[in-house]
Amino acid sequence: MARIPYPDHDALPDDVRSFVGRISPMLNIYRMLPHAETSVYGFMKLGNALLFKADLDPVLRELVILRVGYLSEAAYELHQHVRVARHVGVADEKIAAVRDDPEADLFSPLERAVLRYTDEVVRDVKASDDAYAAVSALLSHREMSELTLTIGFYMMVCRFLENFEVEIENDGVIDPTVNMPPGR
Image 1 (cartoon, rainbow, N blue to C red):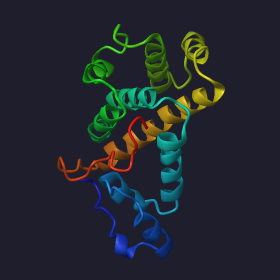
Image 2 (image 1 turned 120 degrees about the vertical axis):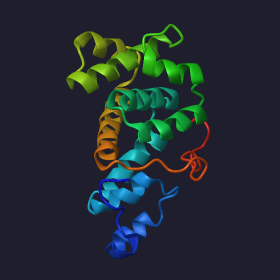
Image 3 (image 1 turned 90 degrees about the vertical axis):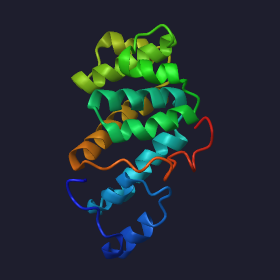
Image 4 (image 1 turned 135 degrees about the horizontal axis):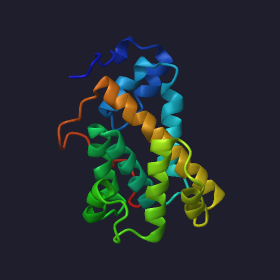
């Protein structure tokens, strides 16, 4: 059970209710988010930009999101993004290795570098020069920016989910990939 009740969407200000009414699928995170009425739009705008409009490869993005989820011990985030990762083509072996062995040989050199960079940003805030150089040698400035924003955004998401104990939807009720094209 969530630590606070989900807000009554009918009681929200008109602009927030109208905006939230367009969110599909209506995952529990989006049901909880309107408590922060003035932040809903910005949260969704940034999340959608990272998921649907970024140059960062979707497979790299999902590996990063899963790694942040594992490091944050965020069950809800992992539940949703394991499905998204599969949807964009991440193999189950890689999904398991993201948790247990991010240095595994089954990852490409770029994937290993991105996972190492993710670990350092989550743990140390600023990645070491070595970790940064390894990734920045392989990604554009835009991709580096999107990678770092993805790490930070999903750290925030995990902390929101865990601190409010947002509940995982029943399996099969809501598919987080419903509006997501394959490979995105």
